[in-house]
Amino acid sequence: IAGITQAPTSQILAAGRRMTLRCTQDMRHNAMYWYRQDLGLGLRLIHYSNTAGTTGKGEVPDGYSVSRANTDDFPLTLASAVPSQTSVYFCASSEEKGDEQFFGPGTRLTVL
Amino acid sequence: LAKTTQPISMDSYEGQEVNITCSHNNIATNDYITWYQQFPSQGPRFIIQGYKTKVTNEVASLFIPADRKSSTLSLPRVSLSDTAVYYCLVAPRGGAGSYQLTFGKGTKLSVIP
Image (cartoon, rainbow over all chains, first blue to last red; front, side):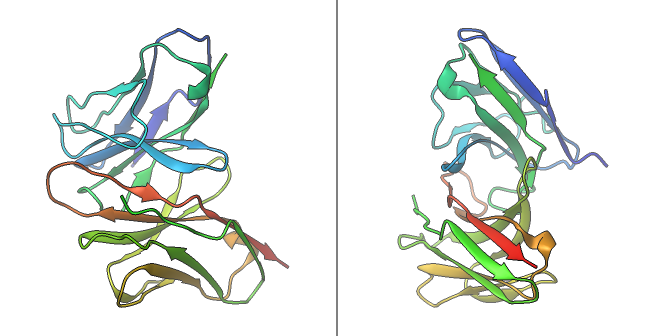
């Protein structure tokens, strides 16, 4: 059982470029989340989805968009990357909103 | 949005009990308290969740006083492998509608031989 996977593992991106971070879970969880983690700031919620077909904004949504076309996949898109989006991005899922979250291994993104 | 406050770091010797407290003064009625552990270069991992009083599982206990304005994660007899960052999360469970959650900034626990 893979659990939750993220791709790519790391990426260096030029400012202004578009980038999609991929997240897939095989646990049939309804809820999925995207976080960014920066040194000294802990984990901050970017976007979430309570169930397939719905999404919501978290604490720091600006500059990011998500979609939830099916239960398994929850991609995060940076339409035009900026250096302040340099961070480690974690995807997570849970059976329902607020339940135990299972985290992916993370994507380390550097925007130059 | 419940703000959480945790100590930045703690040190402990192997074999001791460690208690990490999280303050969440404006916790909402439908919020639960969850603790996660994170090792370097890995995603956080669930430890324990509770709503009130005491919850215990095979790795930790969670103490929540009646006013729920704080919570304490207790790790019995820590070992070197417990060296990690521990996060407190306050968030609602279930239901529809918007979802706001707040992770604490984490407590870096260093276990000393």
